Image 1 (cartoon, helix red, strand yellow):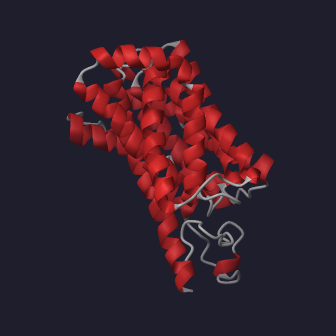
Image 2 (cartoon, one colour; image 1 turned 90 degrees about the horizontal axis):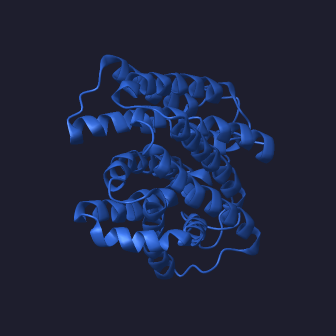
Length: 317
């Protein structure tokens, strides 16, 4: 019972850390993107993240992931760490933040659908209802902010492609977490993404020489916190729930972006934006809530069965 309660607290806590740090990434990308091109920014971010993750891996004494995890780790590295970051960086240079947030938030829906199709994840009514409420909130946030800048077809397509890469990467990552630790999957996924972005190395070196210190610091921040830390906490939480449910959690990101922009940049949101943010958070709460029926034992709930403990896995003795 004690271990079960500890897991009940750690997994949602890890998901919360991920959501907060990913929300902060939108502000940092906007700042660093003024000095760095999309590919160079992605490579710099991934190199910083891979270095931090590599040190963590050595300190914990974890080596290569098992062979059974290589395929999912490599696919998630290419699609999520590599393709997604380049596409999102490029897309945010073409469209305003509201439109980008709206389009990228198709990702959780695609994650749930792919998870149900490829992984056999269940889609209970609470998850579907929560996703619908959160998506309505994301639409409200996107539409309320769409007047802040011009949109382009290219930018919308890039953000949509980023959402597809994100969803496919999450679904590919989920099976790998059945045999490898969250740190192993995140470290080698980040390394694969960095290798994929090596063609942008020349741009990174040239732009780093001329970039202001603040832009470079934002790039380092993106690598250390929203990448190294947040992707690890994401993988930890994903290993303990379904892909669809974790995807629905990220609907809280637009609401937090609005709050952070308000506090850090002095951008006062309108009533529609605030209402959309509240809907995003309410939908996440609904999607992660559990039926109150006492007929099914807590430990036997289909979506919440704790994964078997592995030697060296996070949370094991």
